[in-house]
Structure formats: structure tokens, C-alpha cells
Length: 119
Image (cartoon, rainbow, N blue to C red; front, side, top):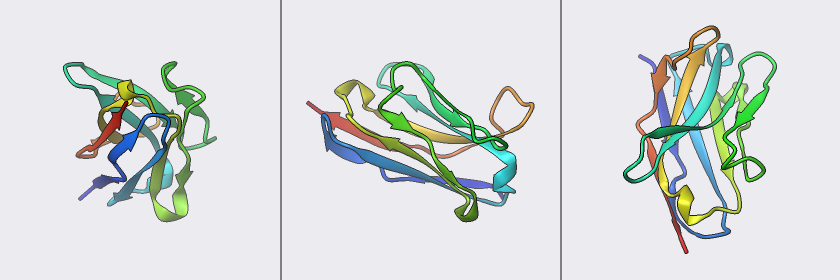
């Protein structure tokens, strides 16, 4: 079965960096766009970043633009979220998702990883 397993979350001080990983199995990874969303305490889940399957084009929420990047390694079936200059408002559970081209919603979600940024 398909699995998306996130790792790399934890506690970090403001202005620090973390790299989240999303290891995929059970699917043809290169065929899926990959994305990250987050759910902050008391808030709805929100889009953070995504990368397409074909051209590798990337898209970011305004709140993270210039601080986060979303590379992918098709040979390792892994997507990443490199987070720099972290702020306390980035504290959230971060979820990765895989989406086939043409779909508006992800096909699969990971279980989430907690990121806590202290001030």
C-alpha cells in the first residue's frame, strides 16, 4: 500500500532551520506532484509549498516564500521541506501529500510531523 512517512520535525529556536523529509513507498514517485501543508494550533490546515512531477516547478505560500524550499529526489522517492529563518508562527504539524497531475486534491497524505519554534 502507499505510504508517505514524514520525519525531521522537532523543537528549534527562532531563526533556526529544519529539514523535513517525506519518504514515499508503494507509488511511482516521479509521477506525483508533492506538497506540504501545515496545521497551526487552532487553525485550519493550510498550503505551504508544492513541487510538480514534470517540470519541477515550485509554488509557495506567501508566508514562507524566501524562507522555505521544496526539493525532491526522485531516485530516493523523497520530498523535502527545507525551512530556514523559522518563526514562532511556523509552529504546526506539517503534512506531506502526493497528488497525481490533473487532480485538485491530493491522492495521499502522510501522518504529520510536529515542528515547534520557540522565541
